[in-house]
Length: 128
Ligand SMILES: O=C(CO)COP(=O)(O)O
Image (cartoon, rainbow, N blue to C red; front, top):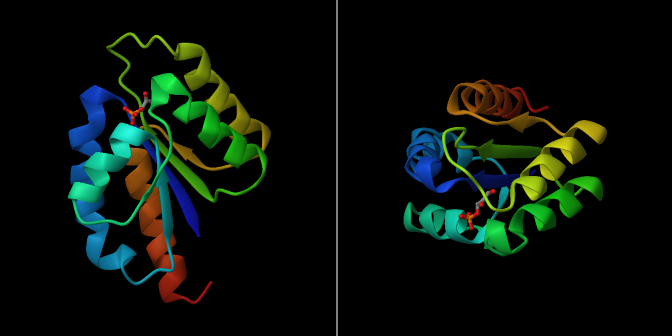
């Protein structure tokens, strides 16, 4: 299972907090994490192994979109900050569009991600 993780600056602390909450469960799953550059550095510091791509504004969102289009991702968690401006907004929109085109589950806030991760851990317990 490969999961992409992305968080805007105002949401990076939320991402780290969210992942900490699932650590015990996620450690039991064969999981590969991939993230945009700065998000990845934060995730690493919280004790996860993660493949870091470019930083979002330099093409990281686009790299994740390419992986989604190539069906290399099972889930994308993208904690967006709707109260801030982003110079690479076209890339952000493109990533979300590509997830919809290819029917890749996309969680854009912790409440949605929580539901998806709970399902993931349930599936794992049931051997699905
Ligand atoms: O900009 C981002 C998402 O649009 C995230 O990029 P970073 O993880 O490099 O901050």
